[in-house]
Length: 481
Figure (cartoon, rainbow, N blue to C red):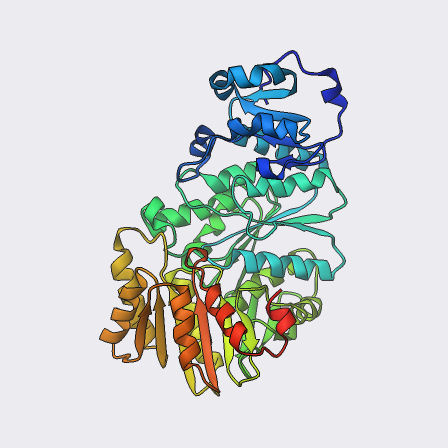
């Protein structure tokens, strides 16, 4: 931080900080408030317009903040209001950069292994699986809360080390959505000892221009790793496999092909909600009973297995850890209802590849179901071709063996039109998730298998909520946590 104020309250330097806060509504006694403003967001790769938090500095001090971090130029604009409190202000050129620099300093003091994970889809699931596998060997693992994987969430996660430095390692997902080297910046905060790349898909092309640009952005996680580290790469994705030449150390590949170092063979789906495969690693083979669905989650499990192998775990140890995984809420969560139908709640995010992958999961794992129904929300941030992409995805869904499609909101109307053009007569459009829930409520019956898939902005979890209001779930408490 480039401190320009020389009149700080002397007690400030000896004060014990409770928490670092970027939301003034969360400020409590003992906190330090970072007042973010539009220039900070723009300089650090965030899209959109954001409120200037400098206006909340005085209320934050009134609520007990011991100090506030403020841009020089914003102080000048708010001088009349802020000058009486100048002894509690820390001046910087960029508050987000200052937050990141602070997190980097905390990381340097901790100085233990970091596993960084990126990919167009599956980051959070792979992060949770990797942390779970490594915790099974007794490690205490720091991980992002939810999907706090950007230039704000990442440093806030790392700053937890200031409160508790007893973590043995960190498993941190790194996201990006613009061409402003976001992953490179995150790697500077916590240079990875192990860099994991899951996949490269046409996500965020609206901002990055092409899938090759997406690949270059994802590759920053390999370029940013420590010398002598390990790159864990998906051998089933040619763009990811091509990143091996960027590694500054070892490369461990994973996948379902024979060329991968860590792979799954003899894959089977005994019934929906059960996945079995043999895990093959360079140090052995073990059978895995895995409670997540679909081939995409097998790849997430293999990424976690490769991380376990890198940290010295045997195939048997990894297999035992994978067998005890609990699916995260709204991410492929399987809900069995007493009325005899099953719903897969995947209401967290959606893009064309992820949607088609989940539909394939529904088809391959739902052999005993009488009807396979897909409730799909519109997909966001697809760029200029968004209408044609939705229509094409609808056509592909129709050809996969789905019995019914409900498209939810906006461009999902193109999804429905594409499905109908491809021969799926039972395809309907709903204006929003409430309408989709009512539609499904009227038509669902015994032995149906339903996928509910949508981006957070579409709120397809409301479809699940409507079902839970009317029908009894086998374990309702766990379903509504």
